[in-house]
Amino acid sequence: MITAGPIFQLCWVVRDIAAAQQEFTERYGVAHWFTIPDVHFGPESCELRGEPADYTITVALGYAGGQQLELIEPRGGISLYAEHLERFGPGLHHTGWVPEDYDGALHEARAAGIEMVARGKFEGVGMEFAYLEGGPIGSYFELMRLSDAMKAMFETLIPDGFSNPWQ
Image 1: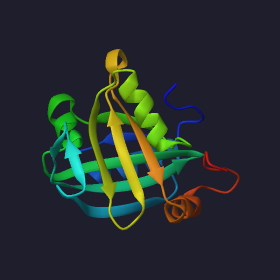
Image 2: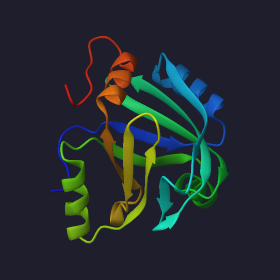
Image 3: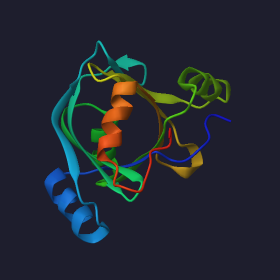
Image 4: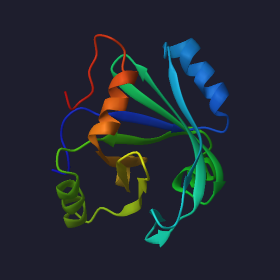
């Protein structure tokens, strides 16, 4: 088994992050968004299909109850997100987990023959990520390693009465 436990995140790739935030707020009750504009991932910290990647995205994080929702708007460069938008249009891109043993989960995925299509580090905030091919069910699966500081930041975003999976 690659990972277990609750899903931490559902992510949609969108063309217009402000419009998507408004829709998720009005239709699905996401009360607050934490938006990080123009996040650059460079070739020293990121790869796509085993090759260095260089791209920029805008990210918005919100919660529907205890479920983290992420919106990603590609802003430049070649990325898994831009590819999705070009091939399929806006829509659900990945489901994310925070495994207790990130390295062990990646090892299990490799041993099972699951392709890692992208990986990287969000420099300065203490996050590593890897996207695994979804196989016959489509979309991607993201595995994340989060620093204590990153987990603490996520704790400030979750609504009262809910908890993140590591609690």
